[in-house]
Amino acid sequence: MLLGILLAIHIIVCVCLIGVVLLQRSEGGALGMGGGPNGMMTARGAGDLLTRTTWILGTLFFVLSLTLTLLTGRQSGSGSVVDRIKIDNLDASKLAPPPSAPAQSAPTTSDGAPAPIQAPTPTVRNPFTEPAEQPAQPAAPKP
Image (cartoon, rainbow, N blue to C red; front, top):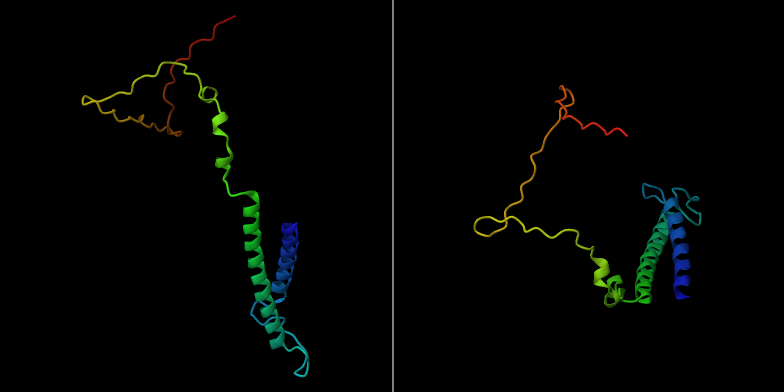
């Protein structure tokens, strides 16, 4: 209930903040218009009002965002997804694939250390040269 109310207020603050920011001039002069010097709001007064409103709405936005984040985190629990997995109920024999062939021992050097892995030599085919002879394909058996 509280999260719903705070979320509704947060959306209203966001829409108002967007509107106030779009009303301001890019040069920082706010609306850039106003009545005469005797008018109720001069250009300077409109700029001050929009600037003050932007600061208030921006502060409300950040406070509401932080509050919603903290309340949502407390509501969903403090445990992580890994903590919720029931590892005790898992059968290890179903997880590992059955061995298909006996494992071969890794090659070793004369002193018993594992031999370094040798990468295959890279080959580059140049498409602009004549293709090398292809090895003969075995003929398909006739039915």
